[in-house]
Length: 116
Image (tube, one colour):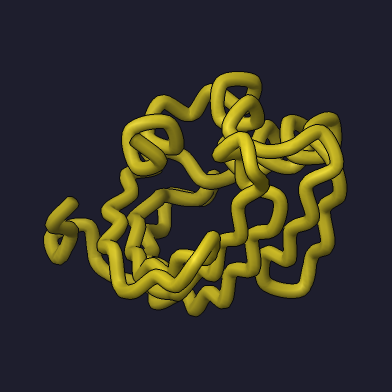
């Protein structure tokens, strides 16, 4: 469901999976709360065009899950990238994500090398 939500590129829809006071670290950016999530994702998808994401469950313990992911996007200059990374998620008692820590690396690729 997380993969489908992110692939919708709808910041408001995605933000509803997180607590009102959710804490994120995305690369070197710190985001706090749903309003900042919407702003962050709006900016992300205005700059990461044709975004397509694939997530893979890695492990879990208690209310925490680790996933690996990769996604592809095109920047405004027409260059293509594949981003790889890991996320650590922590959920509250209602099943909403209260913490999301993402480590991400980008690799420039040729358009012909896309597979997502």
